[in-house]
Image (tube, rainbow, N blue to C red; front, side, top):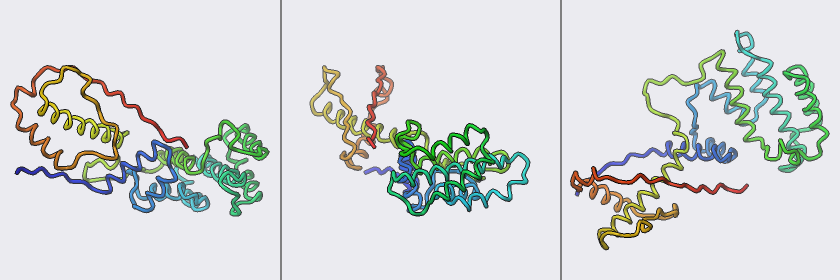
Length: 270
């Protein structure tokens, strides 16, 4: 019996899940998985990764302290940095005070006023500050179209991405590596692997049926299974690979008609 080795790393599987969570905007679950596994989907330097953790955890005072040594650096937009951080803090205070996820006693009206006072000096335009002041009068933030789906976790991710652009001007943000190995998955890698896996299992089933029942006249006999929760074993996969290796060369150069896959992805309703 021949053997083929398959090497997997659990950290890479976690990265695939993190990427999927990020694409689906399940950022609370994403952050919890990062904390529990110690794995992040970032190729960032240690300092920038530390700042990312501070932003995603809402450590606002520590974030501003982090930026203090950079204020003297040429090209560092300290006002924009403070504005992005304090705006995020202000929106979160407003969010929790509105009781969307339950009223939080960690924030007070004084916190809102204090944030506004700092923001007045750092807002890029007067209209930005006026809008923030107006939000104080809104009884329910979720009723405003712009903030209907707003949540702290997703907003923190966006805040970090904006802060990252500021940091690029004054410091290296990507970790230097001696080994050129991808540390972040390709876009939609998990979904693509699942689609390929379903097609592969369907191919195994189709080939078995052809071997047992002969040629099919109806092209509609081939269907791709949509059941990702159950499937064939590793043994049948290995047997299929071995069978492919046993085919004559002529089988690999036969003409064929291209087939398009119409993937119908049903997203979660939150």
